[in-house]
Image (cartoon, rainbow, N blue to C red; front, side, top):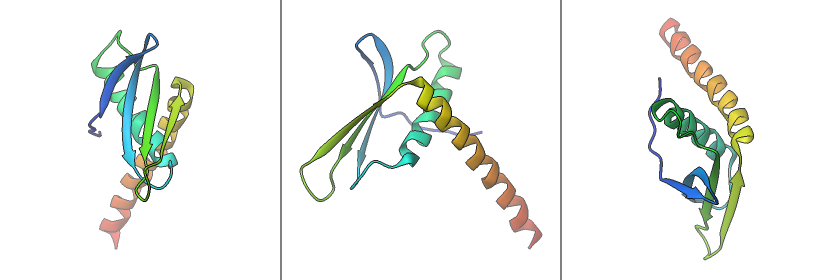
Length: 100
């Protein structure tokens, strides 16, 4: 019950990965949660072509600096658990809003 748009699908060192580009002052955990949902969406619609990791490129908003972050599927699986918890909270808040 969610939709998403993946920035880049790439094979890096023999691994199918999601490439995500962000402009920000720092890398946030929300980025991992977002990409974890993208991984699940991709894996469900591309059986046999599962995502094996994430390459996150953060471009500085105040300077010309950048950071790169690589994380494997174990981190993305943990981040998807956070996504599911946030999604459940979203649904519960919608119910409570109707009860006000």
